[in-house]
Image 1 (cartoon, rainbow, N blue to C red):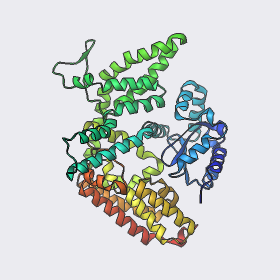
Image 2 (cartoon, rainbow, N blue to C red; image 1 turned 180 degrees about the horizontal axis):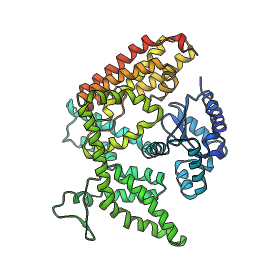
Image 3 (cartoon, one colour; image 1 turned 90 degrees about the horizontal axis):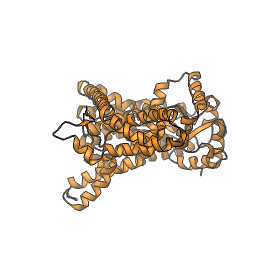
Image 4 (cartoon, helix red, strand yellow; image 1 turned 30 degrees about the vertical axis):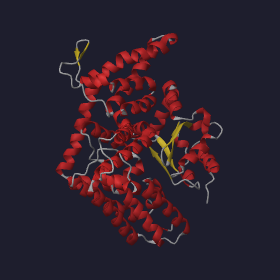
Length: 471
C-alpha cells in the first residue's frame, strides 16, 4: 500500500511544534533530522503513532524521525508545506545560528532544561552534518575502488592500462581531495564562509605544498619553522581550520566596517588561516589523530578478542543512537595516516546479521503487517545496506532476537580482530558488493559475514516467539 506522504508531512510538522518551531531540516538515508527551537514542543508519542513513521529519537541535538529508505519523498512533502521556505536547508540553518544570538540562547536553554549531554550531542550533530552530505560520492568511489582491486586480482584489468588509470582517478579523486569536500560542509556547519574554507583546503593539497613535505631544506613561513604533514586524504586539519576560520570571521565582523567586510574578510581568511593551519593546526591535529588511532590499535593488539567482539556486538546499538558517526573521523584519519582502517572492518558482518535476523522473523511471523514490514526491511538491509528500518521497525521491539543477533555479530567481529582484517578504501557493505568485499577484506571478512548471516538467522528463528511479541 502506497504511503500518503502529504499526510505524513502534515502530521509530522504538526507534532514537532509547527513550522515556526523548526530551525532547520535535513535528512540522511532513513531519517528526517529536525533542529527545533524548543524540543519540548515535540510530541514524540504522537509522532511515533503516525502511519509511516518507524521511530523518533532525540540525538545529536536533533529530533530524528525515522521514515525508512523512502525518506526523500517524506522530506520533499515536508518542504512543500507552508512555512518551510523560512528555514529550508542546512545552509540557511548555519546562517541563522550565526546571526541570531537570541535563537542560540533558546536552543541552549532548552538543552539545559532537558538535561542533555551537550558535548556528546553536539559532537554527533557536527560529525553527521560534515560527513553525511558527500557520503554517496564517498561510497560510490569506494565501491569502484573495490571492484578495481578485484578486476586486477582476477586478471581482467591491468594496472598499466589507460583504462585502469582513468577508472582509478575517478575512484581515488574523492579520497585524495577529501579536505575540499569536508571544507564545504564543515564551513557551513561552523558558520564560516564555506567557499573560502574550500580555497584553504585546495591550498592544502596544492602540488607545491604537497612537495614541501619531502623537501630537502627546512620549510619556514616568514622565519617561523613549519612542520609539514600530508594533507591529501586528511580529515582533522581542515575541520579544525574551518572552526578557527568561523571564530576569526566573527571577530573581523566586529572590527571591520560593514561596507568593507565583504572584501577584506575573505582576504584576511586566506592570509591568516592558511599559514596558521600549516604552522599550528595541521601538526597538532596530526598528533591528536595519530595518538588516538594508536590507542585504539593498542587495544585491538592487546585484547583483540574482547575489543573486536565489543565493537561488532555494540554496532547496532550505536546505530540506534546515531553515535556510530563519531568513529568516522578516526577511520578517515586512519586512511590518511596509515593507508588503511582496522576499526570498521570489525563490523563487516553486522549488516548481514541484521538482515538475516529480520528475515527469520519474516518467515516465522503470521502477522500480515509484520511480515510485510520485516520482508521489506530485510531486503533493504541485505541489498542496500540500510539497516534502520530493520532495527527500528522490527528488531528493537523484539529484545531477545536483537540481543542474540548482537552476540552473533560480536563473534564475527572478534574473528576479524584476531585475524587483523583491514580495508584501504571506504566501501558499502551489502550483498551486491560481496565481490569487492572479498577483494578488499579477504577471506576472513567473508567468514565473518557467513557467521553473522547463518548465526543470526538461526538464533532469531529459534528465539522468536509470535505470542510474546504481538503486543
